[in-house]
Amino acid sequence: MNEDNNVKYYGRTAPNDVQQALVMARVLNQTVEAETASFLYVDNPYGEGLASEAREAFEGETLNMVAYSMQTSDYTSTIDSVFDGGPDAVGAVMYPGNGRTILQQWGNSGYDGQWVGAEAIWSPDMLSEISDVVEGMYITSPQTANSSTFQENMGGQQQITQFAPHGYDATYLMGLALEQGGEASGTAIGENVRSVSRPTGDDTEVSVGGFGNGKEALADGSPVNYEGASGSVDLNENLEPVVPYRIMRVSDGTAELNQEVPLSYFEGKI
Image (tube, rainbow, N blue to C red):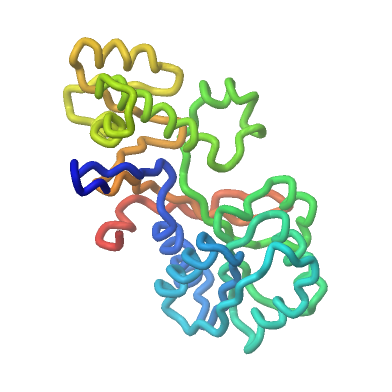
């Protein structure tokens, strides 16, 4: 936020980590019904912040908070620390590379426990390759729009990485904000990006591949509402979207929908 002009310059099209932490805790509390849990996370701000928020929302007893280094290949001692005391479940914030190694070494360790992973671990190739180890694992993920136009232009659903739709939407929203602001500046984006993301009742709806229509509407003085590749992308006052979530469960190497978490679940929590 710039105090001189009261403009917020930072926003996001992906939901913040507090939302995902609430979903992870929901799985631990309601789906797994874990009485005890440990949290394993990559040792960076993303991992630590998300794990800490999930711990806060977990209603049972947290046994261990364990960070792992991406510079290591032997996680035997890390796994021992996670499972000290025999937690019912593990909330995990891991990237696929190290996550694969950790899960494989856990599979050979003799420890039991239900894994609940944040979205970063969702790699279709990894899940397929170590399907016997990850069978039954839960993974949380924000819902994304099923845009056939976006999928076709990206070369098909299998070519779309986890947050590609959100990156597309961020670029699109900035472009619309610049058009509405009438100048190419950060201030123009900050002042206009929220209004082009939300419905007003008399706006022109703009979607994937329709930037020209949005540009024409703005030139004619008509407000626009962007409906994106990742979802509605209705930015709140913090310039963040609050989105529905999916809870996936791995079966035969594929993450399949287990539950849907509606927007109403987050009311009063964020």
